[in-house]
Length: 305
Image 1 (cartoon, rainbow, N blue to C red):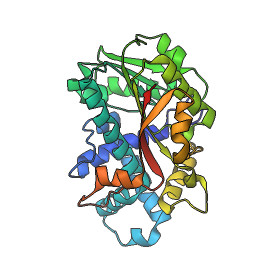
Image 2: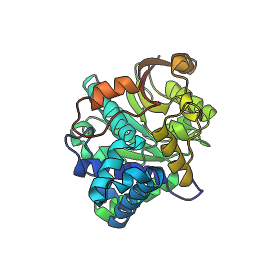
Image 3: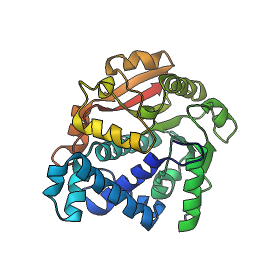
Image 4: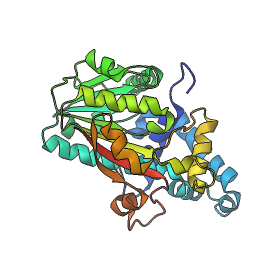
């Protein structure tokens, strides 16, 4: 991401959630407000980018879909990124729902992007103090868009600017209304791919230091094979090339077999580590369309030890 620019991948995520809510049934994850955070021009531009990607990366398949809407539907259902975006959102929010029942009263959204939770889930917001943490440029863009569409910022929502590659999460939380004694749920979706390994470790460490034992963290990641040209799947290879072209390359993958030890070294206990097969079974099995779990993508849940 260029200095002073908001995240293009955050806008892309908003489009995927908006498109799915409007076009697909049953929803894997339904974000009925995502489209409001995109201008009509941004939505049309995103459609065009996806259609162009279909034509560039799968020209023979694209030629078989002369109808624009059918072509877009085929691409969205079979590309790698939409399945990751929808599956991880459902995974994390289902766990958050249970955490609230269990007494969690703070929700920290790391790399919030254009997330709509604070407006979409008033049933959960009434029990939570919510902290959205993201790059200042992306956060400023979002807040401007919220004003343009008339969505007021709830009293229980707190915006904290942070560049994960440069700044300190502990300091950001410490200068806010965040309560370090209160059980907290952290979500960190769509971020680890873009950070160096040391920044990921420092964020895990900050969470374990900032939250009491029993607090939870959900995150997604790509396995290390995704970064090996000899082993990466074709659709993940395409996904990585697309984000590189917009200036936000994916640079880091994890070793699933050592994740528990990696987390333990930073004060976190691994509780779930869903591989693509488990994600397929839990969120995509039996769907009437083409959405299916993405190779190399994992969803994890950890707890502060």
